[in-house]
Image 1 (cartoon, rainbow, N blue to C red):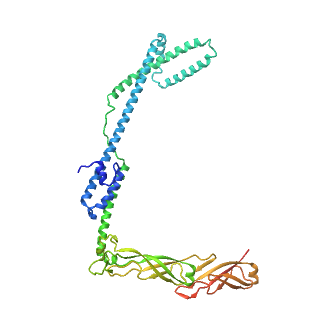
Image 2: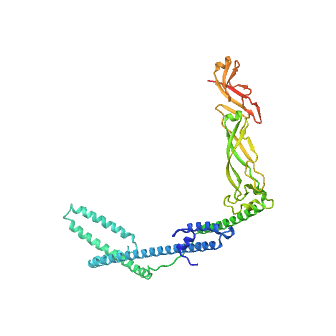
Image 3: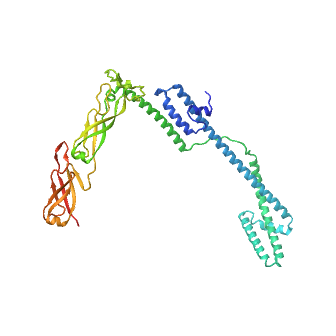
Length: 433
């Protein structure tokens, strides 16, 4: 099967050109879908495998070719830069050699005597150039003031400059001889030659590739194991699949429901038997010799679960006195059972609302802190108190100490499972400062 990049991308459902990472993700998705162990098409699985392997080899070879061409271009630019630098120094040495030939023989002899001490010290040439520039600037500034003495100083400076140039020429000629030898070796190398090079993977790249391969193998193995366990479960664990599961629902209660009880209407999403695979002539299928899971296989309406979610409304009476942690159980209102199995139950978790400010609950009893005047505590008398059921009048004894408590019966919550009795209310009086 011969492929090109466009055909391989089409087999993986991608648009050409693409990246290796995108091809890897597309291959994983299609491989899980068409794997023969999962009931997929074996021929389709072979096609996407061949397309993925082709894209991996194609993009890896393309990456190596690009890196080799970039390395060749870099070496070519380096060779050209070296050739230009060598030519520039050669022309400079030729021009300086012609000017030194026209200098006097006495200057040449003095230059040869003094150049021996500086022939191996290249850094002093930079110092001489800087000194020449300083002398030149000094000569320019002094020329405007002393025009009469300029001719003599220029003649002496010209002689010094000529001797220095002759020293530099000898040093550059020595370097040129060494440079010619190295340039002959460089010119023997073809800068336009393209050499194929392979990328050496780092330790991090190797670890990443190994982790991806191990991850792919683990993913395929886990999916295969899950599929096998699901088949075993649906065929052997008959009672677990057919029995309805219990459901839980949170129910918020207001203060009126907590004190007096109330009939509450709620809406739930309940799992009922699938009408396509679990019902026959409007009735639930019942067969002791056949698991209900086999009827649900290949059913697209319930996605092989045997049940579908449907909305259902219920009317439930909540007794008074409910507290945090109390529950109500509704039998047979959980998930529906299959093949004659029993339905699950619905559990309502009761959640009371917060009490008004100042009240604190302890079971069926409540406690209230109220501030009063010191004169009322001293002389005593009636005091209006706001309870959960309304306003009442309480008699305060004389010389009542601040912080003491009064007990008011039957002003708490109804007792759970015994709504005829109510808890007590504790009133704590605190003197206002």
